[in-house]
Length: 404
Image 1 (spheres, rainbow, N blue to C red):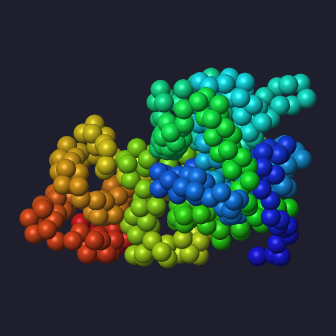
Image 2: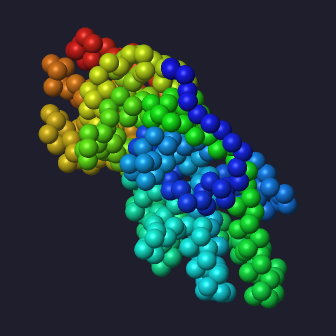
Image 3: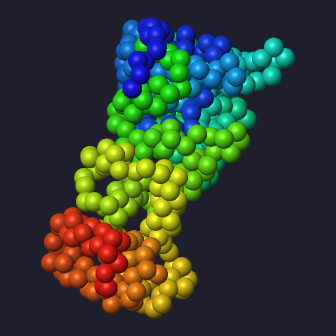
């Protein structure tokens, strides 16, 4: 890693987020991830501290700011977006008390007016959230409580908005007059503006990837999925309007999110079904050390994500093209009903290699169903003990294409 070029200063949040600068979340960043736990801690800190207090660092890259008009947020996304959600709560509550006060919050804290009076916004989330965030948080004409989030990250934003609004309204109930309620909203707004951050600015985009890899946001460690996305996007640059890595990663994410499981679990299952058995803690370093062609990795992840999705959510028709597809699906469905997933390590390997195996795997899959029932449902044995065995034979089915 080359020597980093950066400058760091203590600043208030007002000097950072509520300045004339505009921010965007870069392509390699993880999605908005704060849940009620982090929001609760954020609100408790804010409401119980009478003096300004330190909330962490905000790291931005200014390399592309002159051409794009935006500084890239390397660390601080969670706090900046949650702050914007809270300001939108204050704005929406103020609408019922004083329309002009609500317009002030909107104009000064959420939006930025250009020279022609046109409204822009202080922060632009990544593409997976930007449209929803714009419509229901940044614009002041839509009711997020009536929205229908289509992704997990959109639901997180809605849940956090409702959570924060409930907390603010609970404090407002203690106050009788409209004037005192408006004073309280102003007090919260001032506390937000006075929060202390270390503002770090870096000059080179390349440094941003390195810093992201070594930085943990408050209360949320980077997962193998976050780090792998960062690494892939570093290796596969966007080409003009075409961003192959982003489009492929979104396809993988969509497949896995619809199963209701973690992306990091899928990535580990993929790896230990093909390369080597390894713990999640060591997985990122192993991938970084092993992979040579990052586009091939993405294509392989997409293929496996499709099978992973079918194992979790697929119907009989999804297995119709396979020999004995109906029997295979019946076993897959039985395993699903028993909520057994460790065997997916082996099943993914079998299904993705089914044309190369040179044999019909139906009986083996049926055996896994029966074994899993006896081992887990009857004997109540811990399923994680056999994960290594499933990995061993999954790798053999790839390397040796042994008859099974």
